[in-house]
Image 1 (cartoon, rainbow over the protein chains, first blue to last red):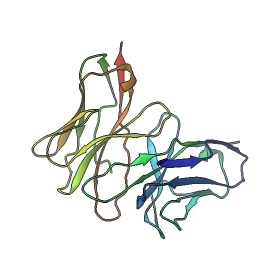
Image 2 (tube, each protein chain N blue to C red):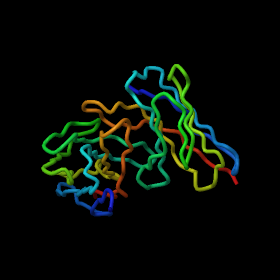
Image 3 (spheres, chains in turn blue, red):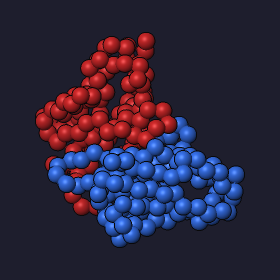
Length: 114
Length: 111
């Protein structure tokens, strides 16, 4: 049981390049989330999903896209990288079974856009 | 619109109890109080949650006031490894509920 796995751990992108941050979970959780965290700041929700085939915008969705074709995977796509997207990205998952459940987080992807 | 209010920072002496307050005066009946912490550059870690009653686990205790408008997270014997940012979150488990974080409390454990 690996929990939430993010790849890659580190990445440097040039302005205008695109990439996909991968996130997979093996806990059969229906909820999945993507956050970004800028240096010294709190976590900002980018997108979330309540189940396969369903996604919704969070607080800061501009410049990103997501898809949720399976329960396990929730990739985050950056189409035209900009320096403002330099950040640490965290993926998380949780379930709604029972009353009040915890979210599990991955170890993060540190992205630098130059 | 912030659902919770926490102090920006707090210090606590090593070995003493750390009491972290959180105000959530607009909490609704089906919303839980969750606490997470983030140790430098790691992914946030779940600590504890509760609805109405006080809760305790191996990490901490959660005290929720009777009117549910505020709560306190208690780390009974703080160690240097408890230095982290602590987030108080209110969230229901029904419908398309986002999980959003505020700015949290930066807790520093002093040797």
